[in-house]
Length: 211
Ligand SMILES: [Zn+2]
Picture 1 (cartoon, rainbow, N blue to C red):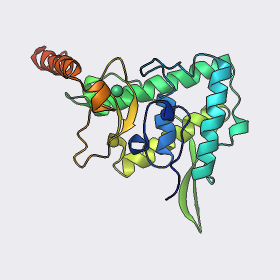
Picture 2: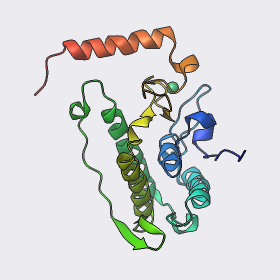
Picture 3: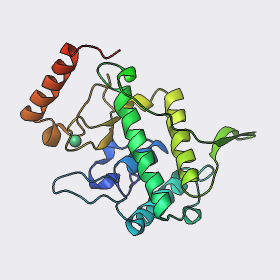
């Protein structure tokens, strides 16, 4: 058996069964830089130093699994502006994933589009998308390429955000009918959270449509 890939942020909250395959794990890791868990773990994107440390480690993992298409860790150096942009990317991806699993449909969640550039290359190894740009833009490009590939493979709907508002951990749903809503039933799917979640759904169903 090969050792499971250890994403530096996700490893704080998720066991190997909850980790997304391949480069999609990087997107999950970005989401899991947020402060979560019990006891509460720090937000790795709080300061440039911790964010840079996380990014170097996470891109090193990317290089290990996806050497042809990975951004080189040492080429992405963060400053205050880059950090803001990375945080914004994290928020927008989380909103997008919440939207795709929203009970009343993706259209119910307002989401400004996130755009990037990528290069397409066809050679004897096949056709690949490669990230483009400098600094955080390179990271954004790589993350969106992974989400695009997951959309085509119909696996993006399996990358989810835990329904517990105090958790919001990103997990990969491997269940047969893709029906999980908690990253971990034992810690987040307790009776009280289930009641709050159901009440929220009910309130939404009763509320008049805004359009
Ligand atoms: Zn959770």
